[in-house]
Length: 113
Length: 114
Image (tube, each protein chain N blue to C red):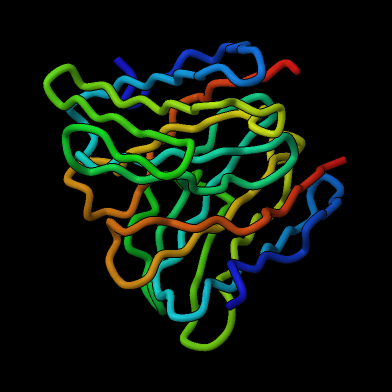
């Protein structure tokens, strides 16, 4: 099993819908998780971080962490065409004090007007 | 408050030449990380540095690649004798004072080897 896994997509949703992006992880990563958004040809931009079980909300974005099932998800409410991008799930390797971020392959989201 | 700065943004080299990529972390950040993104692939960790120290270079290729973060000046990722397979986007990230804190990415350097 890869350390961090994502479905590459593309995930296509209509404008205004909820987009749900999922990520699973192995025991080889820490309990610190990060969601980045990357537009084509651009650098990753941090959306949210989550460290504790449960939900964390920030505007239209909600990150969810379930340690028992080893998955983390990102929900985007009221999706807009400008949300169309690749979403990267990442975690710190090992115990988390190495600074080494392990990224999933990324999920491409397409929001159709 | 300027973000992470990288230069050049685009770099073209011929096979066998050297490539030098520079990264200035965000103000107040003392941890620098380099990642590589090959075409159609995910981001891969290369190296983690603090001032004058390499903390983790487990993602660096064994040959031709080196990195430094001197006491003064930017961090440098150096690729000697470049080959076509080195063509990629190289991103630098920085974090404040603790390795586990959030990393903020620079705009990247796109290296093309002819």
